[in-house]
Length: 220
Image (cartoon, rainbow, N blue to C red; front, side):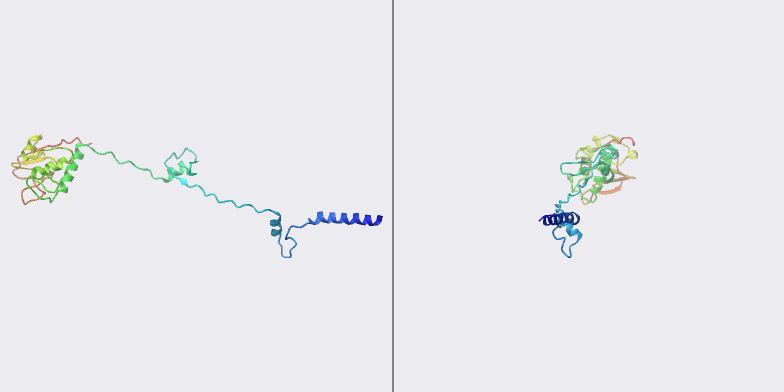
């Protein structure tokens, strides 16, 4: 009996040593003929939960200081980056202030007058498609807020007189019973008479004088 007990203790000891040396029990699947080291490792290591990819927040370009400010996130997770914004966003240039000078008004009057070239003469008409002589000058000057009477004599009398050799573009040119507007270079633009149309012609030889509607400011 004593020898049997000793033999039993020896067997138990051998098995214990073998367990330590061999790592028994083996991982499931490790003793298969075709099992690999990776499979054995996977059998021992629990699988990790795959995380959802988080999209990279886009950069919101906005005009800011190129040399100061830190990127920050707004409520939508958008990165606001002043340095990149200053580098890539085109700067808006405000329009120039409107020129309200007399010179600008005279230029507009001449432009409006030119747009009427070819419109037919009609007695008593003051536009926008038909004109008599004073109706034409009344119409173009009305476009810049200046009122003139619908009468050739009345227009000539309502403004300061100008000698014919001192005429400037925009000045009125009066002939008995007729009025036009000085265009420049010895020419006038007017609505002539029945059967005619708005045209640019040499200043009439029977013109008696001019009248200045607006005095120009000195050139700057």
